[in-house]
Every structure is written in structure tokens, then in C-alpha cells.
Length: 99
Image 1 (tube, rainbow, N blue to C red):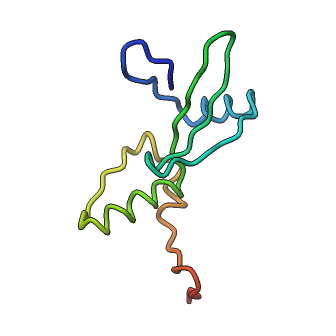
Image 2 (tube, helix red, strand yellow):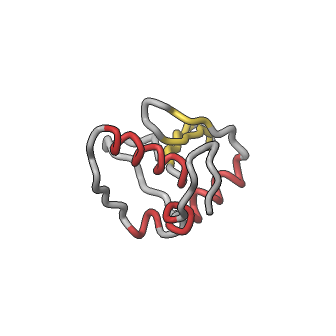
């Protein structure tokens, strides 16, 4: 999360992210350049920029990595535990049926 006087953002837990989204009801956008979702909000006079992933953005990153020949990815469990059921779910490519 920004602002970040030291140059590095502060990580949010899934609960903190949910709380801020509920509290500020922001419009959420997707950045193709960052391959992540983000939103902004004001707290007092300070603007905040929150960058986050969901299963869809992680899948997109994995897809891009695969196209680049990268076949292995490490996902930190503590950051992705709530997303793992959806990430590990096998999805049929668009237009195909799963059997």
C-alpha cells in the first residue's frame, strides 16, 4: 500500500484488503502493465494506492510466464492460501466443455 516514504509498500492481509474495500467502496481497476488490480482512496489528506492480486490476475501472470517458457512458479502460501482452491481448479479453455 502507498504512500510509501521508504520506497516499499506495506503488505495487507486478505482481511485488511477486504476491510478497506468495504470501508471505502472504491472502483477497482485492472492494470495490464502491472498485471494486477488496484484502487485508490483518500484517508484524511493522504492518498492511498492499493495494488492486489486475485485468482484471475495470478492466472494471467502464470499464462504470460508459460508463453515466455517459464514452467515453474512459486506462490507464497501466506499470501495466496485463500486463492488456492480457485487457482488449483481445472478450468476448460474458453469455448470447450469440461468432462
